[in-house]
Length: 420
Ligand code: EPZ
Image (cartoon, rainbow, N blue to C red; front, side, top):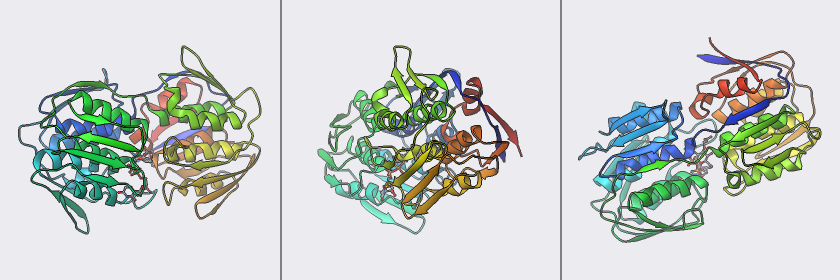
């Protein structure tokens, strides 16, 4: 197992380029299964999760070529797709389930191992199945698998009890080839949903309303291959904004869509951080005023993103003052708090709320990443801690952050990757 050795670092300064969005490229790669020809996906980040998704597409019969120097992945589906996901691949990454909707629509069947719960919660797929059933599929839920069948999907209407990102994506992809019109109500509104809908529409789909709570999909008989450049990663953007803020630095972040990080900008401004949107990119300065505490409540987009809850908590642990963090999206996404407290933070948990007494001095410790975003939070805490912080389980971090060590080191961060 590899780990990061992180030392107290001065203010991070310089420039960083944001990579393509992990949570956009994964559903878009799954959507290539729907095409009758090759698709070229551009600005693809070199991530473990992307590698797993490419392996899954190959296992399903696709020809996949990855050129990470050019950041391009090309996918050419076969005439006849496999429609059972290999267990050893699909259980490695929850996002594998996003291939289910395309396979169901394309082959009339899809069988997947149930994506295990993970460090942040149960992660059920009941809303995905509700959508498939609304389009006439029969769904069988085994104790460790889910299978959906439909000779031909027909347009249907589904209300999502929670605006699930994955369920919205899976249903939208399946509906693209259904017979008739489908509607998703209370749909997720994340930018990645819009990016996926744009990709599907380039393939010949007829999708309207992506990015709003109601998405209308008019099914078409076939979809053709196309090219697409994925949007920048708004969660990586927020992570580097926080790195500049927490270390009192001055960082220019390139390849940013400011509209995708409005909630993060608002919260950082409340903490005294200076943020300037320039032609070159977004300039974030934590060296203008001392950091002060604020309260955070994670919500579905456009609310504050749950994926930045843990890195933001590192800022609140460093800032002066008392703050309350409420996690409303996942039921168990506070596992990083025990690790931060071992570094000297003072954070108490009460169900889905955490209260932070900020400003405690942090010291290095041996800590473990519990999910990829928690891993990033611990690295940022290590930059502010006396002594050396060892962050373990960093394979989780490498699932979602391209060249994380290189990008942080280039800004003056003292971080090294070592094999155990
Ligand atoms: C996506 O996960 C992201 N992953 C997650 O990012 C992100 O945290 C999450 O959306 C929320 O924004 C990808 O896009 C690959 P959900 P997803 O379905 O689709 C419940 C990261 O760090 N739910 O919106 O799995 C679920 O239990 C990762 O990059 C059901 O109850 O998230 C959770 O409480 C972590 N039934 C809530 O909805 C369902 O059928 C949100 O889950 C589906 C979900």
